[in-house]
Structure formats: structure tokens, C-alpha cells
Length: 302
Image (cartoon, rainbow, N blue to C red; front, top):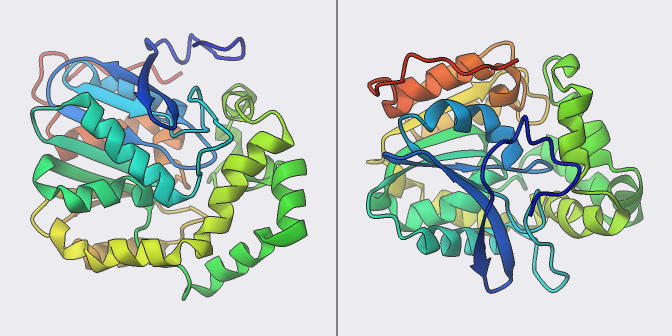
């Protein structure tokens, strides 16, 4: 379960596996208390939530899964890797946990479109929704996103993603406010799960093409947004995100006018990686994690 490249000092959590019909989904399940489910995007895996897991497990049951094809999960050739496929499996994963209380759902990047289909169908099971630099609407009418998506189709996209590993080596560093925060050691934990053209093409390129190709699916999420009107919500946003600019935050604010908004002016696409202490503090306040016996103990973010 633990590959040789895994940094077990940075990722000391016990591995678990959910046996889904299409393959085994790796996840961690730490602590006890009200459940918090953390949902990663691309091209990362649940490693991006390590600071949050370490901080909240004293007061909450913290669950973070790797989507099929990512991180420590299986990567079966016969599985689909479009967001719709990941969303279906996420719903099956949540059902497998048999949670008996509503959960806090924290979504980032593609984790939004992947997990929000389940949330929109089960709003009564969501205690609090936390959105981190994500979206849930069609990008087809966004000129910037359309230009980006056009680059990844066809032979050029195959070269960029399969051969040059553009998702991890070019796009990921550029989405940090300060690239130095993506250290070589941390970057290695994201590079290692995708060592060859096949793994990158099957999983990462599939989601890149889906930015536009899955527009009808995203539109179906947006059409159901009123179902979140009664769900307590927070938006935690890295303001120097070159991938998801502030205009996307404004659309979330219009969709969730009741949400509490926290802006991280010095962070980019991964505020929980770039400013972990401030992010954890904001998340604690959002979900009420500040009243446990160890709530005042700050984790080591070195």
C-alpha cells in the first residue's frame, strides 16, 4: 500500500482502501468526532490536505480519499477518468463509509465538480460546505478557459501532457503565488504517482480535456445550485491563483450569498499548501473546530 517514494514523515497516516467496482480507492480516516471529508483536485492527491488532517484530527473525524488513478489509489485501464466518472465513484465511496451524521465537505479544484454532484443530491447530509478555489458551472462561455482547453486537445495536448508532463511541471508551479513554496520535496510527492506517459495521459490529460468536454455535466451542477441555499457554507480563496482568477470567486459569492468568505491575499491555487497555518485557522472557524480539548494546539507546518 505504501510505495517506496512516499514520504512517511510528511504523510504518517494509516492507509485504508475502499473496494469499489472499478478499483480500490485509497483513503485515510483519522481522528474522531464530526466527520470532515476533504476532496482533492488535479494533478495532486490527498497529500495536499496533510496539514489539515494533522490539525483537525484531534477534534474531528477527517477523511481524505484519492480519486481513482491518483495518489495511492488503483489506476485500472478499463475505468473512466472524466469528472462524471469520478463523481459517481465519490458517491459510492461516501456510501461505503456509512456515516450516521451529516458531514463537512471541503472541495478544491476538480474536487468541486467531482463531489458537488453528491452534495446537490443529498444537501441534508452536508453540515457545512467549504469551497477552495473550485467551480461548478460550464466553462464553455469563459474565453480564458476555452483558450486553455483548446491547447490540450489533439496532438499538442498529447505532447504537453503525456510527454512533457505539463500539468505537474508547468501548470502546477505557475499556479502558486510564490513558486518557492512548492519545494522539491513536496513536488516529488506529486510527480511520483505519474511516472510515465500512459499514467499522465489516462488520468491528467482526461481531466484537462474535460474542462470543456464535460460542459453539460458542469451545467447540470449549476442548474441545481439552489439546493445549497440552506447549507451553511464558506469560501476560502487564494487570490493570486493564475488558474482560477478572482472572477470565479465572485461567481461563487453570487451563487452562495450566505457563505462566509476568507481571502488569502498571498496565496495562489493551493492556499492550504501555501499558507497552511492561516488556512487551518480559517477552516476551524468555519466548521466550529475551535471548541475541542486540543483546539488551541497548532500543528507543526515546517
